[in-house]
Image 1 (cartoon, rainbow, N blue to C red):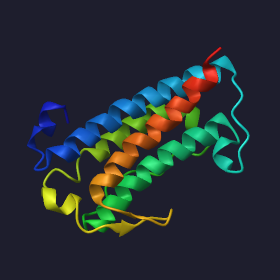
Image 2 (cartoon, helix red, strand yellow):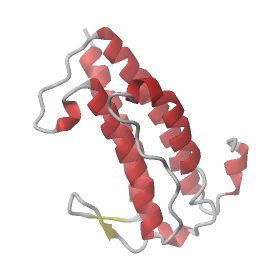
Image 3 (tube, rainbow, N blue to C red):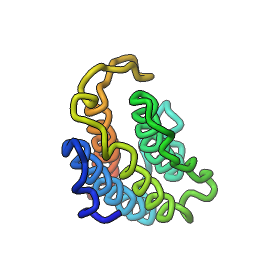
Image 4 (cartoon, rainbow, N blue to C red):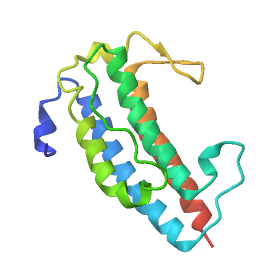
Length: 157
């Protein structure tokens, strides 16, 4: 599906978040590759997400998958068909093909959803707040953006 094929979105706000997510996630993957190649040290953390570069990439991709699965579940849409994230041992070798699959599947489920469904009601998420669908789409964009920003800062001299 090309960008032009995305012109048929009933709610253009969803379209813009999906396109922004594509752009930012691709940028994150490139930044991740650069940071790993540069051999920078990841910050100490109590979460397993920073145990390794592969764990960080897994976290970002698994979160992106979860956001769309959650969205479809809350809107009572069919499962979006996003495959599970590759195993940490294979993630670097499979990242490019997986990202393309993930982003392709992101483009499909929300095309015909009307605007009002993106704002009401709010639904609980595991971090103990309520999100409307629009907020979750924005969160998906920001999650990748924040992790990219962290990596860029770590690479600064």
